[in-house]
Length: 138
View 1 (cartoon, rainbow, N blue to C red):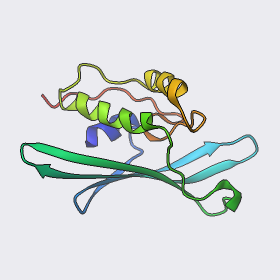
View 2 (view 1 turned 180 degrees about the vertical axis):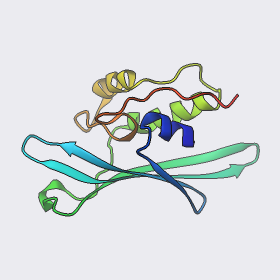
View 3 (view 1 turned 45 degrees about the horizontal axis):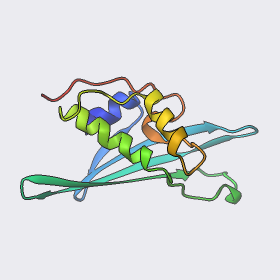
View 4 (view 1 turned 45 degrees about the vertical axis):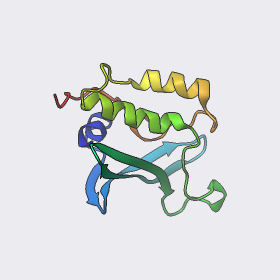
């Protein structure tokens, strides 16, 4: 899992264990037309053994930093399942269960076709992400 985050945005994510999973966080900056928005992006990933399988769940949210107007809306969560699908597809690639690394261009094309939130890019392929593929585990 660490390879997905570190390859998607080298040097930006801090990963640490959390009960039943892992927490990946990075500070972000988003340039708006008349302002700079800063905050922290949180990926909370939980997993548990279920027989021979591992069941996993991900939650992504952004918390704007101090000084962000209340009209911005507080904590943000993506409305588009493509954001989460990108994570699972990239994990599958690292585990050798998928032949190709989903590029940020492929993600953006999928987001444009299916987006419910106006195509807002989060996390692994947000602004300034390069998303180069890591090595597979096997």
